[in-house]
Image (spheres, rainbow, N blue to C red):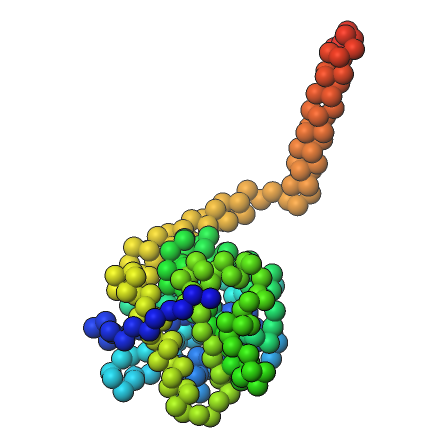
Length: 277
């Protein structure tokens, strides 16, 4: 895996806003607590996840940098209602008043890269545009487990699916490992420093501009249009039976068309006279 240099030339901006996304049970809230250096989010071992709605917490680092972290519910969970997802995305954008400096995708070394996670990352690209990769960082939790096995993150990623390798490549190989269980303060500080350095790295490539202003406004407009279209469809008051009837009719017409084409082709080959009734 390509190595990323750590750039310590911090921008003059006095704040950073990070959005954490991931499936339930990935260690997302625990990572938020590690980043902030305090128990800011409810975190416990649970496959169903404990974050019910987007939450923003902040802290001020020793150098005066205001660090804001937005913990999102399991937006990578396919069972969540799409209307809820749209509301949470809008809520996140409103929370990020100074723009989004990084979208941190939380994965766990304890779980295989799932189809839900793959689909969610592709969905983010559709919703936010291809620029989403310019602000994306892939963060793996479970550093303690890899350390116990004597395995590095690079070695672990050698066996990951091609779709995940592609994602990591598209986001500039910004990928790191977190140990949320360690009590070693020096290690916690080092992890935070590496993460913020990756944030600085991506901001360098985007000329110091966070994902904000016109980008967010365009996204809000897009979500607004989706909502308008949804309402328009509902106002048509078409029943489920009517929809099923129309679908059946379309299939019937298509099937009939195929049969006619086969019949005409056969008639041409056999020089048969076609009778039209």
